[in-house]
Length: 203
Image (cartoon, rainbow, N blue to C red; front, side):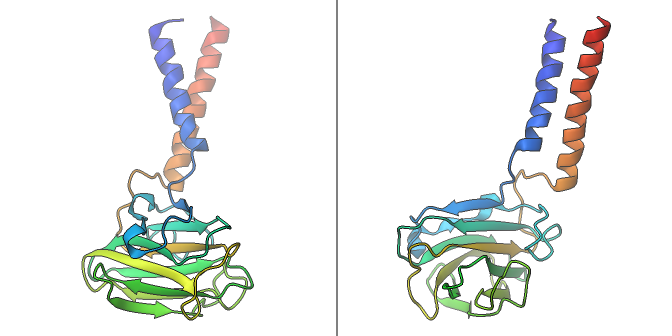
């Protein structure tokens, strides 16, 4: 097998690897983000991947944080960057029926910006009326902090899981392919491997 053939196979397999790679839109809350100082930054996880439960998911970059641990009782904190004037949407989905989330947004100086309780607006990811849904406009360029708690300001209990979707207009989606680009790359990888097999049989 020649070096050129090896390179062709490697390229095809690398392209196909994109097909099975998960999008960098979702991170899992491990329980280490119980304060503003330890907030999980979502900036590296934004993409324009299509997600049925996220409003305008293919046109507005978004990231999702999923609370999966069951042992900790705490407030959950996340952060993200935004540019002044950008539209922002915070959306809690898939909350437990015994979980009434409350969202608060702060600046880096811990000053409150906005808050929301039951504004779910009937979106697809909400199975009940307790899920928070908070649209607002960025008033400055910089870092924003989100605190998720139980209404009115209680700690989230063990086993109370949820998804927090953060959508930010014009946010950079770092190195994450959209669905159309991924499909094209997958097709190219498959065609490359099929072409190699055909050449091998003729040889």
